[in-house]
Structure formats: C-alpha cells, structure tokens
Length: 186
Image (cartoon, rainbow, N blue to C red; front, side):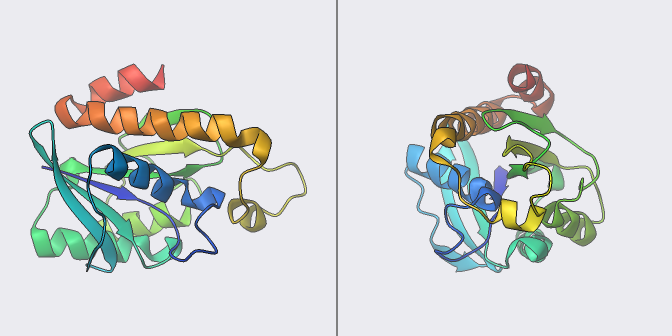
C-alpha cells in the first residue's frame, strides 16, 4: 500500500498558484487512474484506488499549506500506515520549472508544508517529489511569488513537471524509491 500526499491550499483562489502544483499533480494522477479524490476525512480530501496491483491512497490536505502535517498525522494515526509508504509531492523553488527532484530525507528547506509534516511525524525521513517552480526574480517577495499563478510562457514547462511527477509516482509504486530517484533525478 502506498499513500501519496499532494501539498497545496484549499479554495478556488489558490487553485492555479505555484504553491498548489502538488495538488495539480495529484489531480492529474487521480485522473490518469480514475480515482475520485472526494472523501472528506483526516482534514483532507482522500481517494483510493488500485494501480498496477498496488493499493494507492491519494491525499490532499485541506488544512492550508502551513498545517499540512496535521492531516498527515491524522491519516497515519487512524489507518496505522507506515511512513516508508508515504510520498509527499510539493512545490520547490530550488528546482527549475520543468524539472522534478526526488529525495528520501532532508530538512524542510524553508517550505512550511514540509516543516509541518516533519513536526507532526517527528522525522525528516520520508519520500518526496519536489516539483520545480523556479525562484522569483530578485526583490520579488517569496510569499507573493508562491501564491501567484504560472505565466503563459511557463505552461509547457508546467505540463512537463506535472507529467514527469505522475510518471515518477507510477514507477515508484512497483519499484524502490532509490530506483525511482535514479531514474527520475537524471
């Protein structure tokens, strides 16, 4: 069994923002596999399916980004799932748009959603797919940047990032995360 958490903020005013690229990828992944992410439990929207013989749960925390760990912890405690089976999908400014970086541990790197998950799980060791959103231009406030929408000229790179994330998630269901990292970190 694998559980995949996509990070973002609930509400239509955040739907297309850079900070919600984790939600975008989870929605695309759900679409690919006909999984409805509509059950409201554990402070999240949840969908379950079977992908290539692997029970897969997709989770979109509805707590707002900075409290994502509350939802992750609630799901862990209620369903007694292992952190080894978790993959967190989220935006990363240190990765160029159009690219993804996979890691299995590390600090939050300034990302409040990851910081919250680390606080609520008590560990930095969990699988992650960091989706590139690039850094803002100098002088541009980070909070404004992550809550801004993608520019038209970034559309192709955004699509590439989402598709690559979905491909990596699919691969990770039947391969070790180390093999997935080797294949997709290229």
